[in-house]
Image (cartoon, rainbow, N blue to C red; front, side, top):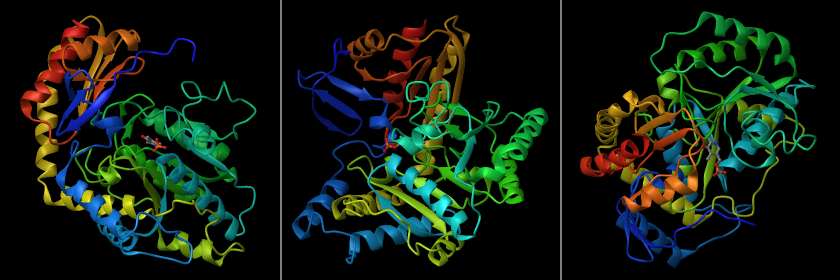
Length: 404
Ligand SMILES: *Cc1c(COP(=O)(O)O)cnc(C)c1O
């Protein structure tokens, strides 16, 4: 590109520290786009990959199955909300969202419901960068304008009002119901990120809105898809954000932290009912089969990552991380440049009034020995769960220094 932003060569990473090629060490506030939940160079995960490499790195997943995929499937079924018993493995988060959308459309088709080729979603969401997911990202901050005419057109409900603990807004609930009334008959499913809209703005909302969506989906015959690619595996304080809402969606997407940040892998889970209806349809199978489906290396490291997470005091770690983020970011709320400070689980956000200059702020943070990569008006932390209190303080101090 003509004028790329500067990049920093990395030599290695270990624990919560990233070492640059010139020897400088950075405390990691990003978990590499939220996936390296155990930190880097994790002995258990290294061992799982090595062991699997010496057996086989890959075989096709058509006509074959293998232990890493079976073990991963079992673990995912056992840790996800009750009733999600079927697992489809794909290569990346975006692909798992494509698969979820196709499941929903095939499900409706198999039930003889024609003309339900659209999706319904909240504004302000982010679901990935391939065509299907892009088309349900926020219509303003997403890439709809640029790819107008190329992207399928779906329906949007307003973004749920902010605040995890803020009581439900009755007016908003009426608008939501009105959107369903208007568009639901054309839709196969409602898709959303439960409780936390991530890349669409680090926006937290009351899980009560999800219960309202669930009731509306039931009333109008839509499936409900939870995209837990960012929220899954403990980030919000629960193993899955769906647990805040207290019910099981029909379909759930997982990715990012699934392999502890080692390799690209994602999963789309669904209920027995969804799988059975699709099986009775004219296609009889889900029409998707990625070349690297259920890659054994990725599955083996995902199994090791889940085992490591379950063995660790992850809930206490998130509670502690949450307390530390609240404590050390609190002072930012008083500052003129800051609109709001919010913390939920292992996510801390300082929202500024004005969009930050990424190149400038990045250089500032690197000088202070931290790795934080904001977007727009959101300066946020989503660090590895193993972060110590002093490392958390260091990250927060750097942010305070910038916004002061
Ligand atoms: C990151 C993300 C995706 C896309 O995942 P990729 O692995 O980058 O394709 C989808 N949905 C949500 C909520 C995400 O945070």
